Image (cartoon, rainbow, N blue to C red):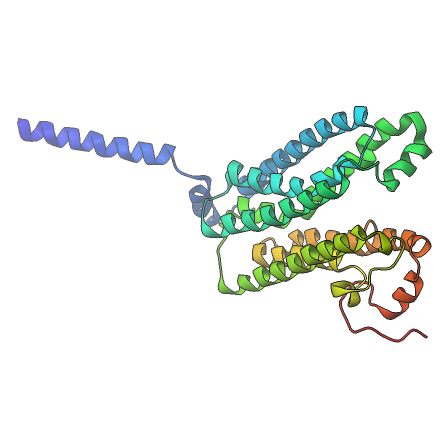
Length: 310
C-alpha cells in the first residue's frame, strides 16, 4: 500500500513538472516546433516590433519633457546635448526590456554609453551658459510666435525619430532578431570594436584640439589646421562616422544585417550631406579667415595628406 502511494505521488509530481514546463515554455521553443511546420516567425516579429515601439515611446516622452523645458529657457540648443544621451537611453532600455545580460549585449551597451556620455558631456561643457545656437535662432526669427510648436516637431520629434532609426542595429542586437535568434559573439566582431575605438579617438581628440585652439584669444576668426585638423577638415565628424560603422559591425546579424544597415547609412548621410559637413562649411567660409584656402588643401572628411592649392 505504501509503495503504491509513493508511486502515485511520483506520477503526480512528474505530471506537475511537465505542466509547469509547458506553462513556462518560451516563445522561441514554440517557434522551433512551429518552424518544422513551415510557420512564419510572426510571434518574434510582433514581439520585436512591440519592443522597438516601446523604445520609440520612451524617447518621445523624454524629448517632449525636454521641449517643455526649452520653452521658458527660450533655448532649443538643449536638444543637442540630449543627442548622445538619447542613444544611451535606447541601449539601456533595450537591455532592460528584453535583452540578455550576456557578454555581447553588455559590450554593445557599454560602447554606446561611453560614446554617448562623452559627446553629451562635451556639448554640455561647450553650450551651457551660452546663447542659443545660430541654427535655432534663425528658425526662431523665421517662424516668430509659431516657433515653439514648430520646434516640437522639426527639432525635438525629428531628432528623436532619427536617433531611434540610427540605433536600430543596437536595438535589434540586444533585443534579438525577428526569427528568434539570440545575438552571438564572434571573433570578427573585434574589427567593429577597433573601428569604434579609432572613431572615438578621432572624435574625442578632434574636439579637444579644437577647444584648446578656440580658447586662445589670438585664434579668434582663424582657421584650425593643426593636429588631426591638418588631415581632415572635420575629424570629429569622421570619428562619429567610424563609431557607428564600428557599432554596425559589432551588432550585425545574419537575419537582420540587410535592414539594420539603415542606421549607419542614415548617420553617414546626416554627417556628409545635412547637419554635418555641408551645414557647417557653408557658415565657416564666411566667418573664418583663410578657410577657402584650407578647403583647397585639406580633405573635407576622410583623412589624407595636404595638397597644394591651385
